[in-house]
Length: 195
Ligand SMILES: [Fe+2]
Image (cartoon, rainbow, N blue to C red; front, side):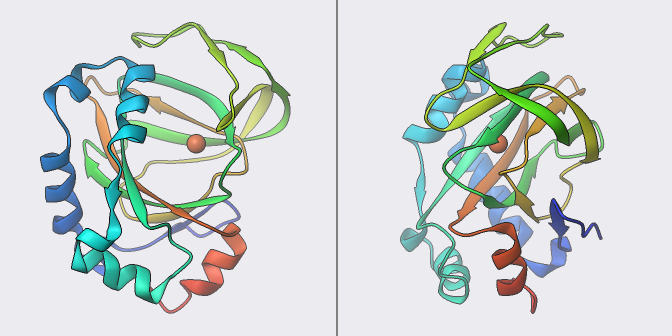
């Protein structure tokens, strides 16, 4: 199990993983699957799922009230999502849904420069070549990879450190992202006895 300054990994058996897998595969639509990266992210934001509508999710949130009252389904197509800082959250609880294996890496960066525009030579991605920082995301230039992992189990993850996603498979990857409204360090304390 990974446990460092960026990621705390849990076992799949620590949660009802099938609940999250079924929920995700029911929630995604064909339009969403076919959508290029920017549009897919818009579907993510426009189709959040309310925690209160699902008893199992509400039970988890009752134990960890700093988890947001909604969860988001995120699709990552083959290719790369540029390195960025999440500006409106410092931590997330991420849960694998579909095609979550060693073929996709999340990489954390150090020694970087925040930038307004990010030019990316995409490889096989349908996404744009130039990405613009916005109210949710600040892109970075330079930087060295300090740590990388593949999301194969539920994790708490630091989203304040720049991170990118490289999907080297030929299929999309699907995850649930549940924002934690405090720091990664606080979340570790909160989850020290499990989920
Ligand atoms: Fe992010």
